[in-house]
Image (cartoon, rainbow, N blue to C red):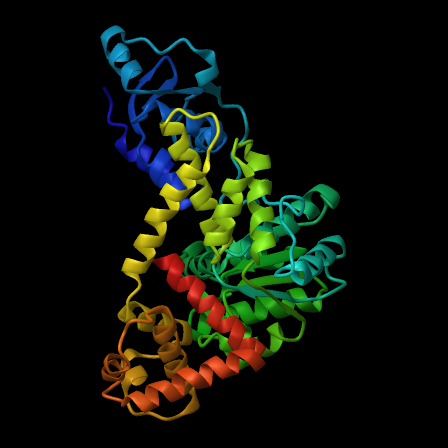
Length: 455
């Protein structure tokens, strides 16, 4: 029997970004390749329920990843424990053709547009109606309106969905347009590779890739390097496209002015177009998102289950969908045809308990330091310049809010021995500012969502 582990790890790497973390951990990461027979990859699943959920929800993604890694594989078969025993006894692949998936679809290149992300599958509510309208307008008339379009918001709120929706809309309605979606990390890596390559010493290949397009979409621009040459190249790429009326769309987890690594001239370019934020979805939007997910995935779930999840998960869409997947998984393990409130309570019980246990003052400080690009030494030190004081007060507010039982004196000790009156002042100042300062309110919401998601 050949060693399938290296190639299987490559399959897992490809599919991990295509599914929720819960789905990956429960149904995909637990799979084990055991053999290749007659051109079929034989895969072991830990339970019958997990096997059924995998084939129902993610067979297409799995077959795409397998075809990309394994040569001359035309089908794959998933076995549960009982079928595995029979397999080793008889060395025969199970004959149930419903559990065999033929591989015929072409593989999309890295960073290709994901077809599942469309405007039709994007649920519009009060928290995102304006950014949706802007994205739709840009998709219909690229280069003519809102250029550049800068979208920002916390993790898991739908920024990447909108980028892919724009690209897919253009692909189907203006097939002659050259549309490129990339991440900031890949832009940086491509540029560094071009500098190292003797074949691209003048960066002509790199520039041809990023400047010979009609639409450039860059995700996670907050990770732009401080390196002068990288920002210089991005600056010139931006200018070249903009001057030729090519559409530029950029996403970030924060406003351009709050990206510490961004040079002033880039901030100026980004703010010259339309800036739109995505806020955390309200209850009605969260419920609508779950209902849409159930409809698309053809889940069988009571509506009161969706209402229960929507009321108890208020951070982001990714977390909502993750909990829903977990509920479906529990129901499948129990052999139920329909997920009920019992599975929802069980899934949320573990989720809520884990989140509360893992959020710590130290973790909050680490996240705030990273968000504002402030060192921990400055955060707890004596510096009083605004660039340090504002993040420090935000950090104090978040610790007081998320860890209500932590004594003020203990919080003061964390911040260099400050007394409780200083802690109260910082907490109340931010609490008051949230009511009147929209940017501050958005920042606090984003940070809370990040802290809860990371835990």
